[in-house]
Length: 474
Image (cartoon, rainbow, N blue to C red; front, side, top):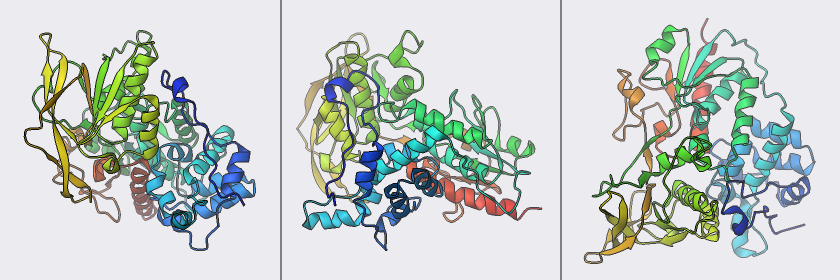
């Protein structure tokens, strides 16, 4: 039996660093069969416990081995509405793959390595997207008399909408932007998650009867009270975390200092990389610094690189991080891809001041060297600035990617909707119900900035609570 994992084919760094086409190609059926055949089909499948939504990983991989690809996806759909998306962006190395029994065996046997569960999930999802089978669940009770409003069309909102629509509930999704998808649309570049994959998943929801109302900002255009007055039985809030955090250091208002959220939204959602075809300009420097160590920082660095390389312009992109690579929260795959494409890394470095030129634009960045101290609450060693270690790096553009917080527009417009000290919406962790009757929430607006699959896990729990409530109504 083949022990080594079947690697996904990737475009060469030279080919991909100048465009936005997908970097990683999916498995062929032959490759998927080879990789699936490595699965030991453990009786106690620990990988399932490593999945935030509890996909029956053993059984869906077993279906691939039997070449029953439709059944493989049907098994995934029982727990995960969007395998084509999650198979591309989930941090599997910290979830299902980390729990795979072969991960531990690999320490003793160099020929073993965890199953590429996420790539197999992507394979099954992509096969299903091309055939568009029905996703409707059989229900003993007709729930079509109920209408539920979902606010936000990111991972949490889409997942909740799908769970409810599969049971026959009439769902309307309210989205403030002009295209649905939330962070899947504006936050993740198409070289990682192609837009047509998002489009097809949303189209599948429309096949289930989900209606999308775009350019509708709940909290401004409508209130939650308006939604109940319009006849909705419940409301789910999947607003995400769309407000960028900043460093709070001098010079942050200089020209050419962007938040990663604005920078990626201009490119991913508004087509700035196609200017002037799309009337969305975005300034791109020749010496660019991206401050942060998460997936958003990697995305911003790789996008900035492509915007210049695609025009044949030489560019230097540096990721600046206060800790070392070992502490970076970004996926190892994304870090490696950035390195391959030419992104540089400056570790143990803390920015202290943006310095500008006479035109009011960024010219350089003052920094301090750091060392690692004691672990923080998350177990990562705290960076400590070294006094007197000041140095200056020349940059003409900076992108700040240090996290997002929940947007407060709806909260401020909704009396009685409780939030915690981080301004995240407070919920009952068992039901995901907020402080308001009939109003539920999930995703980044509840737990802070997290992963796509974590947001979906909360949305599934909320959908289950909403369904239970609807079933009890006359």
